[in-house]
Image 1 (cartoon, rainbow, N blue to C red):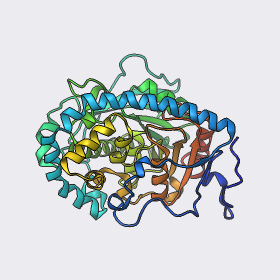
Image 2 (image 1 turned 30 degrees about the horizontal axis):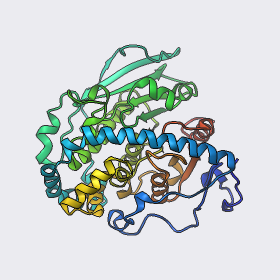
Image 3 (image 1 turned 135 degrees about the vertical axis):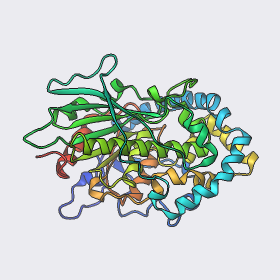
Image 4 (image 1 turned 120 degrees about the vertical axis):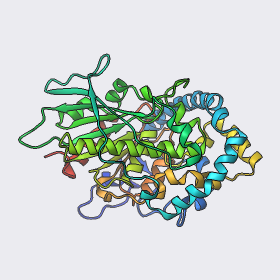
Length: 425
């Protein structure tokens, strides 16, 4: 096991796991923050993406972390090759980059305001949500129902240049989720609802049922809503070579608007859960790209009871530079266009959780990070942790997909949800 001798002393009434987990972070809440003052996209060091995050590990944990990190590097290379050959030529060719640069002042001005309502506009209240029987094998709760819910999304991009093309993808226009619901009442009260958001290209319901341990949470007494991100699953574009391709294949402005739609559509489902299903408590968790979306929601939607980003990405501009071979292609494109990394960060800042202060108190935020993660490196979790006032965080000895000792953080999550009153003790 990892030694805990370097962990800081806690103040009265504060538990150690609110600061570190079994794997001891090299820094503590008393160390200087990584996140700079002022606009983060201008002041974050240029080599942030290349800097490893330090941990103190026992011999056994060091072995496990090294093995899982190596697996992640292979997976990252395969994913980067697919993005580099199938997405970049469509959205990052010189003409599209030039158009994105012209769009940049609009997005940068919105980011500088720091007001999420400027970009993440509230959705209408009168959206009709349709219920239908799930297709194929699905979870069948013994004491409730499993339903697919969907609606025709009224989302329109803020950017007029891409609005017509973006809304022309009819598959993406129907927002989708799967909803597990107990009997409508428990002791006369509606059930708390856990909303989960999948990662990039990882939308199958069965996969996320396993990853988030959703049957376990359901048995603990909450309802479950599995949200599908734009351009994923049945929302993918007609000619997409893989699920999620359309999220990134349209260029920088397109990525911003895809995040805006993710937040917009989720908030409509939240309206449905509260107003039609009677849920008084709804919280969100998400993994990877879904983790970034859940972190964005924490800065946009105050009705949420909690946010638990799991191995989240927080700055896509920095992430992509680590993903070889696409990182080399991006650096070459930026050099050829005379574009700096700070400019790209600024172009994407409007859809980045680091730009907005969380609307939830620190006690209702919980980050899960993987020490051996090389797809969404632990530097991203650390950066979000700093931005969120060093809230509760749990590090596990695994990579982006293989979450070793997963039972540990699931128990910590259950404890966290009980402490904040989401579950009754």
